[in-house]
Length: 96
Image (cartoon, rainbow, N blue to C red; front, top):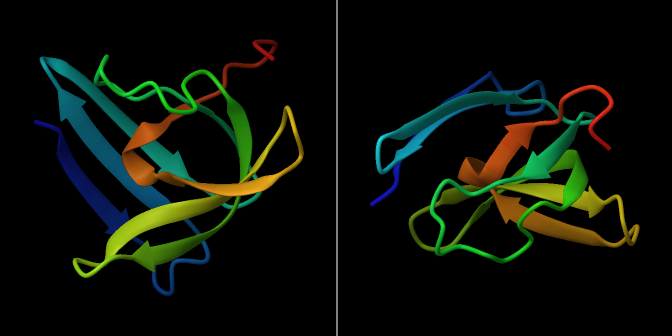
């Protein structure tokens, strides 16, 4: 099970702080529109978009529960897409 919590700034245009954990692993990331992130789900079973790099363009709610997702532009293809907030990891300088 993935534990997930998000701390939202005002109107969600500034940033979202995401804290997630799975199987003893823990990660806290501040997701800011315009910044670049790598998709690294903590669960080894989640393979969709793993290791892809993207630029966050905004946030949106999705589904009946109002789950929070990020709108992204994929660096490898330039296409628009989305990703769950708990899949983001900081890109280390020089890693791309």
